[in-house]
Length: 113
Image 1 (cartoon, rainbow, N blue to C red):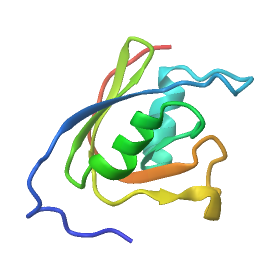
Image 2 (image 1 turned 180 degrees about the vertical axis):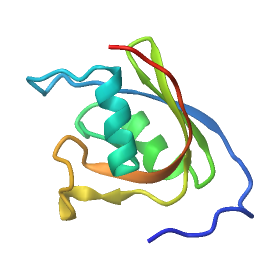
Image 3 (image 1 turned 135 degrees about the vertical axis):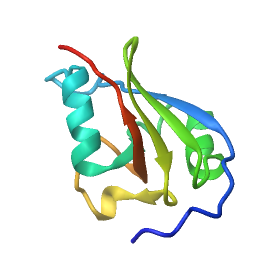
Image 4 (image 1 turned 90 degrees about the vertical axis):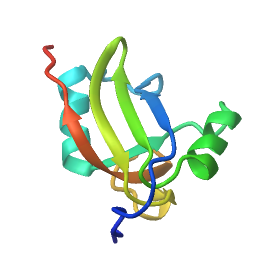
């Protein structure tokens, strides 16, 4: 379910870094871009660490905020949050993220493997 965000003012600019410590197969920049395009969400995986980041993601990041997605030093995409956070343990579309927010991609940046 998506809502019209055209009248909601821009709030903040964020960046999210892709981390995969718990995964055996590592993604490259192309993989990250394909995941963003296919699933259209940004998310958090490890709720045991980074309590401030979790609070910011769940309570401070708002609809229409701009989020730069990075993989290592590479900027992968600019996105705009278009909905609130929800717990995907009820959805399980992907197993590497517990909380997620839908987004609209503003720009996909060119990258090579």
